[in-house]
Length: 208
Image (cartoon, rainbow, N blue to C red; front, side):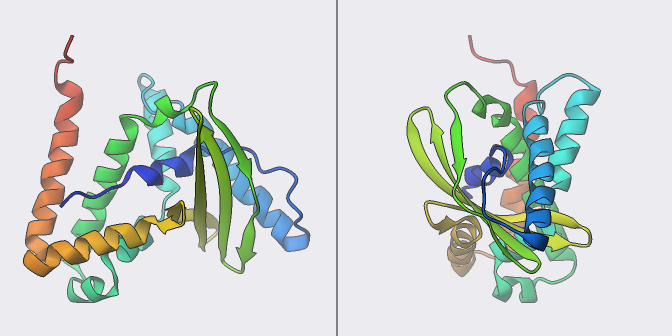
């Protein structure tokens, strides 16, 4: 099973929220989300810095994501129900590790002088928000939509779509297909293996 997780990394590389026709409480929410994103943009540039600066940047990114909700959406209600408890907790922890460790290998490289973006709109509906954004990345046009939900007092990222394809739906379909022939224990083992590979990769000598 190959889990495609790269699009979630773009949640950390959008820009300032300007010129959107919001008013009242929605305007307050948009400023709150914008402020949170600005902090993440700064952090995303430092994920491979040295020492304490790197650790602070990575922690900020990890805390911006609603990992419980992400895991449940990727797993789907059928398998969430069947694997509630210890299995679900381990799946959530492993998914988080694989996502962030993969992201850290490339996240800071996204930013260069060619990267441009434009927020098209922001939709706020009670405790959820969606931000469609058009990117130009090295000359390629990309449409991404970021999904936020409010957890306690914080707005957190829980999903993203790439050209109208939801990240959670994509992963859920792959997991569903895998579990038709395999089992949940095997899925966890594959995630453990991938996590361990990502831990080992930074210590491997680079090819000249």
